Length: 322
Image 1 (cartoon, rainbow, N blue to C red):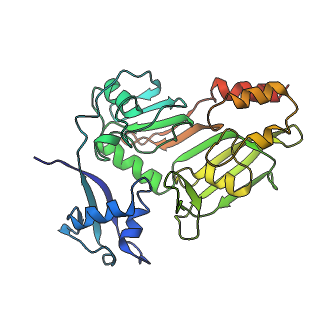
Image 2: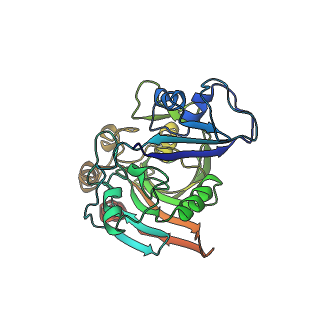
């Protein structure tokens, strides 16, 4: 018997310009538009409880839309004992510090050694499956090579509550990182729409027809006459690779970001050989999600968790500060 998982639930509150399938595809940057079309044509999208197979025209205002996909990898996503740095846990949620290098969920043929595998083991499979078996418990993501504070949902109630907080931008998310160069202003807001790159599906880019995205930043300290800066970021939206794309668009990419910025030429201008060696050996973008604040789904308590950045970034910072 086939099993299905709900991957989208929304209400049409405003007119939708352009194709309906293109609008839906923006909600799933990790999936192709052709895949979304396939789901629609196979009857996996319902409007007010009735299958809706139209790919061009959007449903009427006020319509309740649900999209599901078949669960095909349930047997592949198995619990695995993976060390977790847990900051808080109860029957509804689990908050933890994700290390750099750990993939959040399965995809592209990888079904082992992900955060989800580790959560399944630790939580004894008690995780919300609303977001699909491959993403059990996952409410939001961090890039593989970004470290920092994350939260997962153990109950469906928790998932819905947290997801709505992310959607209405009431979640507090603060990051810190090291960037190349000194921005024109010590603090500001970057508001540029983000979409999947036209020719490289692994990348995102700033594009006029992308989804709205806003990143606020504040330069905390400049080093070596502004060649490197320590910056704090606050996310208003949470698009894929948002901070990395926005910084690259300003010409001040994150140190170590091999996709959206290159270090080699900028390293030539750094005087300290020790700093150069540390950056060369970093092996990831210098970005850490340090603070996450939210309302507890059951108790209604305001909760905030902060974790300092890890040793690899701390070493660079201390060496710069000498």
